[in-house]
Length: 167
Image (tube, rainbow, N blue to C red; front, top):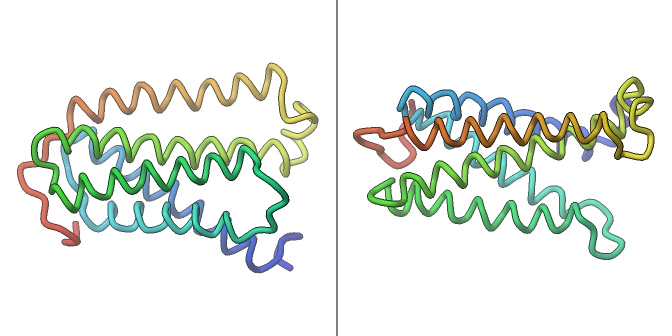
């Protein structure tokens, strides 16, 4: 056990945090119009890994978490196809940006949910996992990604993208 978590849960959480941090680096790179190929590969790989490992927890019927995991993998498949299959040509540029930002938002959404469930100070503010403080936190996250996604779609116009190149 690590901080009250099983090793599997700790690895899942670590992968998720790496996905979020690398995703934020990629997002801010998009603001500057940079492809950041190496960071992007890490972000997409760890985000896929986070969704896949989420399905390995005990499942007792269909839950919102399973639904979000399925949606995340669909969004990631489209984003990866646009980035590496279509190399951001034509409309695949904005499709990739929207997919990457939505996948990052999904990870951040889950981070907020889990934070309110597991961090005592936050849990005390919203013990049922709902209420005004929880809604405000999730609203702020959503607003951040809506604005960021718009800025990224506007600014991300890399001149050349080489599949799996470092950057």
